[in-house]
Image (tube, rainbow over the protein chains, first blue to last red):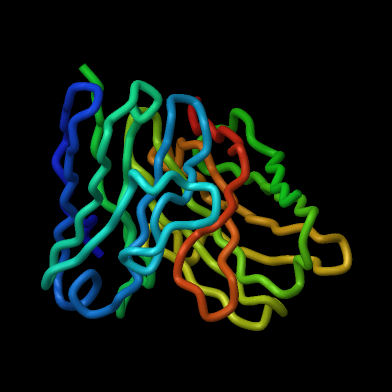
Length: 110
Length: 119
């Protein structure tokens, strides 16, 4: 099972918005509404930020939002803050593996 | 408070074995499916294995199938990963993670335990 495709890096200035894409296939992202997003700071465990494409767990800022179109899911962070600088990973249930992650995206807050 | 605490990592020679543990607390362990996810140094997350709530069903990534065995002891609130025939490419931080029944996301993760396979 190949990893989902994410950009290696994105950057933005404080207060701006950024979007991270996550591209899969009809067997994973496109076939199920089970895309989730995780934030990982260096040396720390991943933290759930978005589940089932667009739902936010309790305690996660509403600056984080998720969406999906076809085989591509997206994570948008609005009002960028310094503390958002981290690695972000998407994940999807698949018909085969049965879970697959993206390669990760490093977010830099300029 | 939900807590997942991994242990058992360390340095092992190629071909060797290691058993990881994940002690759970703060929730009804026997109601949740549990997973192992690993992360090689400087690399991304990779799903390794999962077990259902009563331990009757398991699944593995192709890269570890036949070498790793996931199990659980619901009386001890503990998840295990028995790793045999270890290879250099198994070097990674291993995380245990929780998934709710009929859910498809990892809502809590442990802090991870490092496994290094080297001679």
